[in-house]
Structures are given as structure tokens and as C-alpha cells.
Image (cartoon, rainbow, N blue to C red; front, top):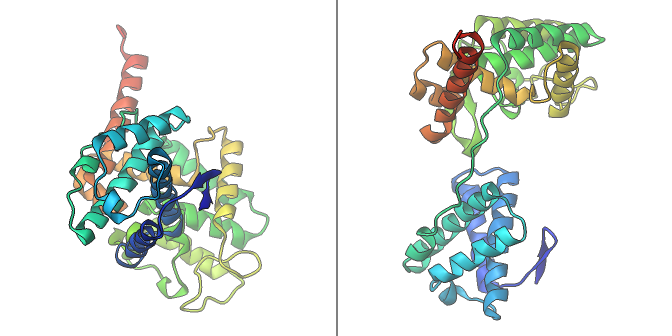
Length: 313
């Protein structure tokens, strides 16, 4: 018996061992991040705990092989009843299907009843990119607001990489001293330890070079490229703080976050005629469906322009 997210969970040692084995599989073979594994564990542990309480018995592997459609419906109704959103339930169901699919392959049972459970419909949130003018203004602004020139150059270099290359903060801050001077293309390891090739704009290479020129800390080949004021690795929170100050100075909405620069990269490429498959590769999305959301963003922006400008709108 254990605690997870404030709920009491009980399931058999065999089920607990299977859960641990599945998480180890995701970590070892798929390269899942720690926070992703934590979310997966909470989802599946909650599911197993529900089945334990629902049936009034500790469920071993043999019983998990006999999960019915009624079990799935009861669990999903329970989760909605305790206030879980449709989006969160869809994520939890995906975790459960992944776990049961892995277990079925190991134990040799048919997971059809679990796989046939349908996720609730929900309205997917659209990314909130900045306009091209706002993105350029942010890059200029972060260069003006730091007290020390090298810190200003550092912040500008990071946000230029986020917007110019579509990097996540974690990917930009994972760059090492050996990556300088930046080449024309970077090999980036993103989510799931998947590698992708990202072209580097001359402006981004120049911004990083200027930061390195001013940086007071020696850059070891295996050490972090971007340094904090005490010489350690730059904390992502400092990038978020720089972005917060920039959006306050420019009057931008709270959605103007560092990750919004990555959204802006994708949206502006698409608006300029970029190929959706190419943008998928640049962003490192495993599924084209994830990238396709930017077509909805571009269409929504086009409708806003239409309604504002057309005389009969």
C-alpha cells in the first residue's frame, strides 16, 4: 500500500513489479525523461489502485490479463467523477494502454478490451506564438535589460536559439563548450533521446559568438556552454525570468514565454510556406499530428486578419 497524489493505492507485488519493469523499459530503451516517467507511474498506479478497490481484491498479473470493457468504463467514470479533465484522462488512458500493451506482450494475453477504450474528446489548446515583430522585439529587449554586458549577450544568445532554431530551453542549455563555435547545423538530442539535425542561422551563430567573447568564465569542452553568474550551468528559470521582464517591458501577454518562441519558429515557417514534414523534423516531433496543430494556429490567425480587414466581415 502506498500513496500517490494524495490517493491510497493498493495492488499486488507482482503488479508493482510489472509497473517498475515497464518504467525501466521506458527509461532504458525509449529514453523517457524523469518527469515523464513520474507522470506515467502516477497514471498507471492510479488505475491499478482503482481496480484493487473496485474488485475488493489485490490483482495479480493473471487478473490484469482479464480486464474487461466494464472495468475500463468504470475507471474512466470514476476519474471524471473525481474531477479529472478530459485532457488529463486521455493522457492517463494512453499511459494505461502503453503499460498493458507492454505487459500483454510479456505475458502473452490479448489486450483488446483495454485498447478499445476510447479517450474522451477535448478541445486541443492551440499554441500561442508571438508575431514576427514581437519575436524580434523580445530578442532586442533581452539585450537591453541585464546589468552586465555578458549576461545580456548570454540571454540574447539563448532566446535567439529558441526562436531561430526552434529549440526547447532544455536543448539550448544542454549545449556544451565543445559546440562553440556553432556549426551550420547542430545535432540536437530531444525528447526520448531522439536525435535531429537543426540548421543554425548566422544570427544565432553570431549571438553565441558574442556571448562567448564576453563571458568571464572559461568554457571547458565538456562543460555547459551557457553559464550562470557564478559560473555554473545556466538555470532555465533565469531564461524564464529574462523573458518575463522582456514581455513586461514590451506589453506582451503572459503567454509570451520561452517556449512560445519555439511555437513562433514553427508558425512563422509555416506561414512562409514551409513544408509540414520538414517542420516536424526540425521540431523533433515523433508524430506529424503534433506538428499539424500549427496549421490550425495559422488558419486562426488568417481568420482574425480577415475579420478585421474585410469590409463585409
